[in-house]
Image 1 (tube, rainbow, N blue to C red):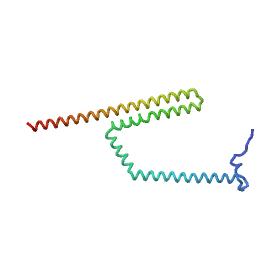
Image 2: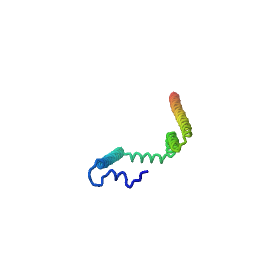
Image 3: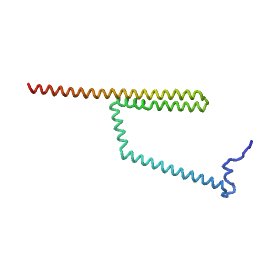
Image 4: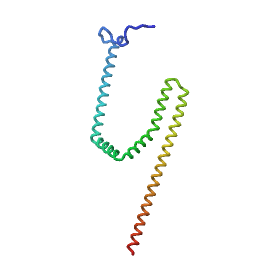
Length: 171
């Protein structure tokens, strides 16, 4: 066993102040880290400035405010949109949950449970996606049938009114 009385950094930097290869390497690493930090900060500030300019140019705050006001007027629409968003993100949330559970079990050593969990999660994800697809297809078909039914009823009502007005004009 080796007992050390200093750190590796102290070994890399010479104590006599000379520029040894290890000291130059340490300085160049610090300069590289500073340069990269400055560039990343510059790009982050540039992205924030561009995003703020786009938000101002396209009046995103006003649009979001008007959407919020509209949803306050129609709370059932807000609940419907929230339900649709929840249903749309539910498979992904379940998959992320099972992925995190799998990672935790992997790190703790439950290899057999991991395979079972992945199988169950995959089956649940596919089943949920199929159910959502069938539900959306069914709702879409109902809306489509309702639209065509109402348009036919409107056409019949329009023809009936035209027939009655024509017959009334003849008498």
